[in-house]
Image (cartoon, rainbow, N blue to C red):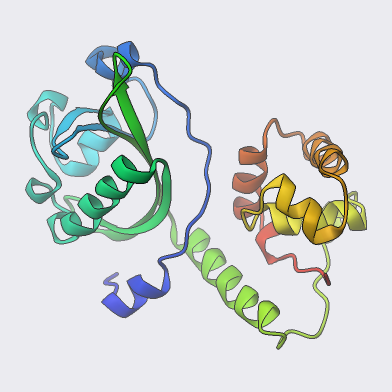
Amino acid sequence: MLFTNKAISCLNYRFYIAFGTLNQEAAMDQGRFQTIPGLVFVKDLSSRFINVSQEFTRQAGFRRVDSLIGLEDYNMPWAEYADRYRNDDSHVLKLGRLQQLEPFINHQKDYSFLIITKDIFRENSNIAGIIGTAQLLNELLLKQLLQLRALDKKFFSGKLLHRYTLQKQYSLLTKRESEVLFLLIRYFSSKNIAEKLGLSHRTVEKYIESIKSKLNLNSKNDIIEYAIQNHLIEIIINL
């Protein structure tokens, strides 16, 4: 599936996903790093790869992790997007963590998208480069994200007049919890949610804890990831 620049621009929509911070020792230990599931990588200040996970190596079409060390995005199957990725790297080095939806192509020429999270990698307290993780989007999840964007455009422009309600299996959430969830999965902070709903910050945190308990989740990041994977992104409430 080939995506046009127009489609890529339309999908340039930020999503927050869980990102486990790796310590310096683990990030530089190739043996330990390779056991990390998913697409994970570390780059130096020049955007050269200094460590990658086994899955990252496989998507790049290499057999050995050490074959990628010292290479850049320009040397990878996704070279056509290298300038975008390097611009993201520069942003992170200047401003800190970034979550972004980016186009991707692997060594088999399979086009898709990544929800990618990058943060500053430090060595002995000094900025040494970029550390990142990425989640491949399957076609269903991509469709759901597009639906969310379309619904939000209508909702916030005032063109969506009818009410979207929770699916039956999620009816255990109260109206207030649904309102908090709606804003939370659109990356409002607890403070901003409190301001939007006219509640105290402490009350909002209690609602979030209740949502986590009812859905058997452990963190706000879990809620967002769960919402994307289980169609909760389709929930729209009247504010």
